[in-house]
Image 1: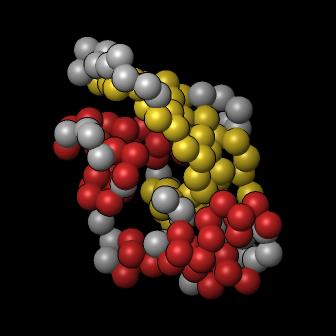
Image 2: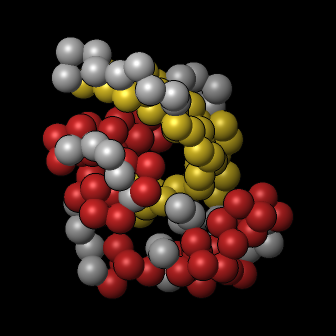
Image 3: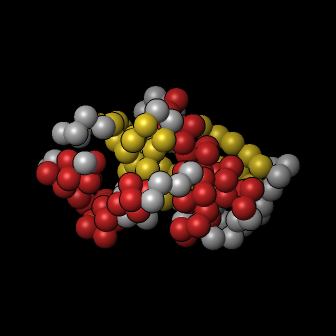
Length: 136
């Protein structure tokens, strides 16, 4: 099980960034699988001011960036005629004991003229093209 492998793998960066509460969040998609964009739309505080289509675009951009971009490359995107822009930069990739790949990444959102929002997270790849965030 992915959660057990992460818990047993001692990786200070994962423990520092995710914390116990964040690691428990990975159980939600494992117990009740949902589309990654829908999961983020329903639960993700970074997307709180976005409508459904904007949230879906942001979440799918994270999935695309983690699946296709090498570490250090920023995947940029826009939605609604530039009213919403974002970027996802994978920072590093590592493999946990279960054999799953995980990536640390930085995500930035720009909503119109408002200040940029950003965060750093870790996500693990459960299936090709399906990355599940471990921390909020």
